[in-house]
Length: 299
Image (cartoon, rainbow, N blue to C red; front, side, top):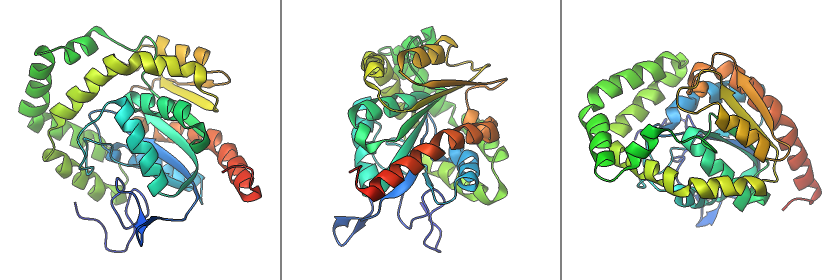
């Protein structure tokens, strides 16, 4: 993958691939910067978050907004992992990125990553945003079919491998049509990277992990002791309306926000509304944690 030569990467502002821990002279970079991390769903890449990232950077100057490619997608060379593996990857990546007070924004499948990371490492996370996220009551009949032995392989391979040209054209049109002109070269490059990945295997791995690890995600809800915002669209065809309601009920102190007319890909189709909600949620958390760190109250 080709990165800009001005030493600033379009996703991270850094000169290295966003999935790689930042190292200097063999050590993690000694930086602690207020950070928002946008975690894409499946099958997807960080390109779908560029409209939201751009607006968040405008509303929260001084805050890094990072959009890594998760294992199995885009420029990340690692194979796809289940939820536990994604959490391990994320926490290692955050340490390498020198992230300070961090708000995790998990879209769809990746909402489960945010929840488990928040439950497992609350000292590393300032808050959670669950964007059209998986959760209680999220499984549809098609989810079980897509994860089934033999049938899952056939459907995933037939749709995402044989149907790749058609899906790629539609995805490219959707993603690029929603991008600012300055972000379109990155979106195209991200799409090219996906052409060389066995996306159907990544999707199948994660689909099976959803069924296998959803009980652990649901169990984690009672252990979430972090500010949490649950954002969903009123016309989401993939996540039942009961799921965000249950997330809100079962996470103490959480807030729920419904975007009227919004579908599933809120980061692409409703970036202005989502950016406003995320910025309003994240600003006081990042400011408070940054002040606490400066005073030596937060490690």
